[in-house]
Amino acid sequence: FTRNLQLPILYFVYLFTGVPDGGHVFFYGRMWEGHSLKEKANAALSVAISVATAGTLWATMGTADFAVVCMAPWLVLSFWLFMVTYLQHHSEDGKLYTDDTYTFERGAFETVDRNYGKWINRMSHHMMDGHVVHHLFFTKVPHYRLEAATEALQKGMEERGQGHMYKLIDTPDFTQEIIKQFDENWFFIDEKQVVRE
Image (cartoon, rainbow, N blue to C red; front, side, top):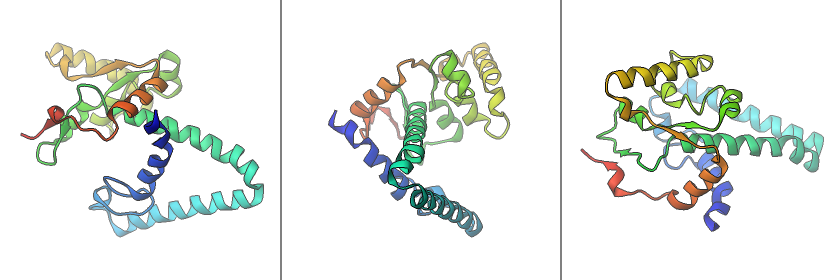
């Protein structure tokens, strides 16, 4: 339970310091390798506009209204995006590849489609139950085709005897699942899951 209280703090540490792959606010690290100065400048401009907009709204609205109108929805959205992203990239049998063993395809098939229930899947454009397709064909399949593309992927893989590579986990109790994952697995690496060769 104590580690669950650390989540909001660690989320801000992740956003601002970029541990382990690079910053979202300060542009350094592996995430920014190979990006041009123009791309970094555009990212910096985006951050500056966001901070200026938030500061202006805070000054105009006052702390109480800003907290209710801006910060509360932002925190809900941030939690939702964090939870969805974390659960899509973690599973009990997931593998962790080193820089030497990672390939694009291996990484894509270690992601997880999560079924949150019919209506939640629909309202979020199937971004949770169509995540594997997103990783494999992110430049080719728009969100409104994720459901059909996922069905085609599953069918094609079954026909080729590769169905075992695709992961779908029913997660109707997703808020409980993120708490469980965070409490049991956060920052723990099971050496049995690491692929070194």
